[in-house]
Amino acid sequence: MPYILATYALEKSDRLFMKSMIEMANKRFGLQWSLDDLHGQVTVVDIDTEEGRSFWKINSARKTLIAYAQTNTYLAPFFLEKPLKVQLVTDLLKKLTCKISPTSTLSISYPSTVSLSSQASSLIVDYKPENYLAGLLKNILSEGKPYILQLTGTPPLYVVPDDQMCYTIDIDLSDNTPTQQMWMKSTANLFSKSPLDNTKLDLIRHDFVGIDINAFIWVSTLQSSNGNLLTGHSLTNTAQLKEWPNFSILPYDSTQIQLAAFMSKNIASIPRISANTRQPIPHIINFYNACVMLDLINIEKITQEISETTKNISTEKKSLLQSILQRLLK
Amino acid sequence: MLSLEQQQLLNTKLKTLLEHSEEISAALVTTVDGHLCAMHQQRNYSLDRLATMGSSLMSLGDTITAELKMGNCRNLISENESGIVTFMHINNLLVLITITLQKNALGLLLAHSRKAAEEMAKLL
Amino acid sequence: MKEIKLVFTGSMGAGKTTAISALSEIPVINTDVSATDEVIARKATTTVALDYGEMTLSDGQKLRLYGTPGQQRFAYMWKILMQGALGLIILVDNAGENPLGDLELYLNHFHEDIEKTTAVIGVTRMDLSKKPNLAAYNDFLRKRNLHLPVFSVDVRRKQNVIMMVQALVAMLEY
Image (cartoon, rainbow over all chains, first blue to last red; front, side, top):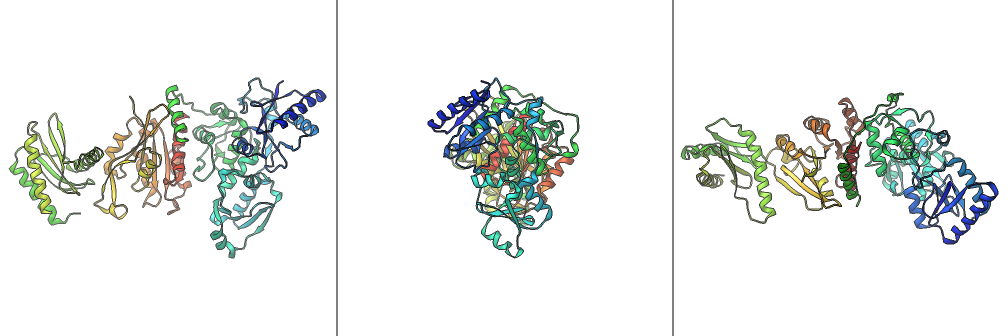
């Protein structure tokens, strides 16, 4: 079977049910899916479990995941409601068949491609940041006035452009809690926006924790992009980072540091970046979008020419550098 | 750090040192953080730089002896093809550096330098 | 056996010793002595030779962490310490008198080493002094045609120091 669904943190009974439902969907609609415990192009994650939530937190930005839960608290683009129903499983598999390319190499990470197949191109639709928190915050920044943003079921965000801060409860944006995910992935129309009285600012600064607005814009863009490129940008364009994201205030992972290193030294297209860094294109797109939103990409330098310096470092040195990274993260 | 009077006293002391010890061609006093305080020489060395480098060496000596729990570092000796340089504390803020071009004069150099350092410590 | 080392340099009081302490498995060996000049108004002590710390890698090799003296008259130590280094981390005290001037000094002095290896710039104490801001540092580097990472950092936070070294390693790879 060319299409494989992996599972994570599912109960044994759920896996058995799912296997049967997949077989039924294959027979009825000529689909070609199978279930594997470990490896697949897509992974179903039970996010009602602690284990599943941890897995989601680490992998949602770079793998295709299906959230399996009672409610879609993560507002995941692919969601399977509990309890399992044949129709829902079938509909989801049909949707995925249109979106995923079968691959002969089974690996948990996205296949990385240099040249764009038409199928890969069709995966990429426009990302409109104005539809998400990132866009709301950018607008507030350019307006220069303080506002309260409120999303039902979450604490308010007090946005104060003069301070370059969002004030809220004490959080760490790298924790990626369900509340944070709701902020970052909910569409803008779900937020209510009301002016913040200037007389209340001192109290807000005192009672709440200030987090750099850019950190919110960064995380929101990364999480709401879903591998879709910003409107008006093209995969064939070339770009260079004009400055590094300030990772001391922006949540990051090691893959983003690598991307920043490559993109700061090279003018390259996204597929070329993928080929050199061996990172999946959707992941790079999310990073690219976030850098554009923070004005870190040199747009004037976007040309049709790809100028690239490839460093050839010895295997010994590469091994040493990996060893240093491992030690740092211990 | 030192008053003008103290600096003059040190300069005089160093002059006397060279007059009484013919093997010594240059002597200087530096602060532990490398500032030249007093000097006298029969040559034309760049003693400013030597003051700074000497402070680095002296602190490394102190660090090594502390690491080895060997008590205080009494002196450091640099024996070279064309002469010898010694470094020793006067007190906890000052270092005496002396230079000879005579390769076989280490004993004399150390003895005269130590005496001068003790006298300078008493003066200050 | 060739030494594996990283060098931390930068202006006096920028946090070199603190940064090395954040990473080092051993107590940092330092050569701090009493300051006897105007430096004493800012700091009671000053480094006159080097700071030293180390980390053990998985294969047993040591990654040696060296800190240079901050004051320019000890520049001969900068050269000695930089020999054979994998890369350089430059820490700039944003609360100093002339942070961009300080950065220029280190970039000038280490420019050959930076060309051969790489460098990462950490701007410390931005909580005490907001200017120059990171944009100013990035503009400064752009004018010199240098593509180096610049971060605002608090070197008392281990994660910030780790991040700078991660960036340095990534710059060495690409």
